Length: 130
Image (cartoon, rainbow, N blue to C red; front, side, top):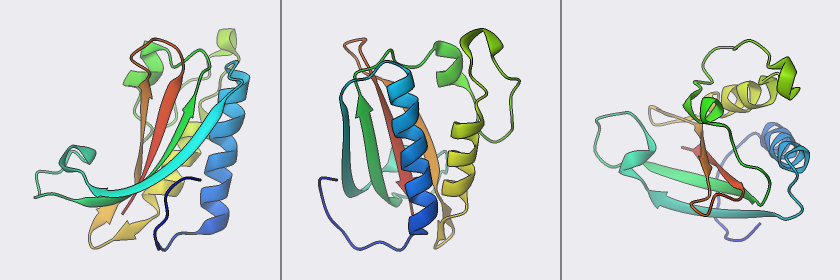
């Protein structure tokens, strides 16, 4: 993991999230997965109208098939019906988001963000940890 900082997390739960994301990337055909970390103020990180909020961020990049538009539009606050055609239940990302939401600091809550690479190849998942 590139980058370093001292943050307080439930290490086992965050490792479970990373395991899930790495497995998902592999299942999407990725043969390269890159993890990195930073800690920065990110006003766009939350839907909150508060002033700049500081989050620690863990990025998981891959060169797999990326996310479908329906996955990018999905809210992970509630379970959604399984997609049997694509052999996807959505449980991994649902629980990943629930684990991040269990991390609180100074009124802020963790969350997850999904994006596709601008090149059209691969995806980036960002874990926001307050």
